[in-house]
Length: 172
Image (cartoon, rainbow, N blue to C red):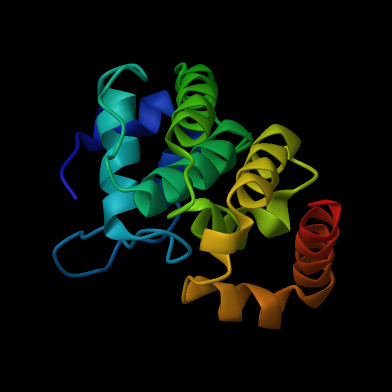
């Protein structure tokens, strides 16, 4: 992942710890990224830090969702001198939230729910927008391969969606 170590360490305590906190390999000085996130998400976050939060957001919703989580982590990174990284991360977080809501559709709402479910209390507006999209397109959503994974991981939520479908069919 390309990026100026000095700029990144100054811009964000999160990246300062990654770059100076004993995470660099002894040979070659390669930084080991946070393995909770893909290289695409790190690349996107580094681009955002370099562009002060105004770089183009990733086109793929999966990467955008990862960037959303990574920006939340960077924003709450704490410690170290503040070079504006938290402010940039907050900007990226809000842009990602809007971008995800704007791109929600029947084809991706389960992907969004699967990635957001652990963060429902932190990002209720996104979770509610995804649930609303599911309920508007429930017949299409139930045909998606992700439905089985969602139902397996979150049986109570899946049951609530099925109950919604049953109630809406019986109203007709």
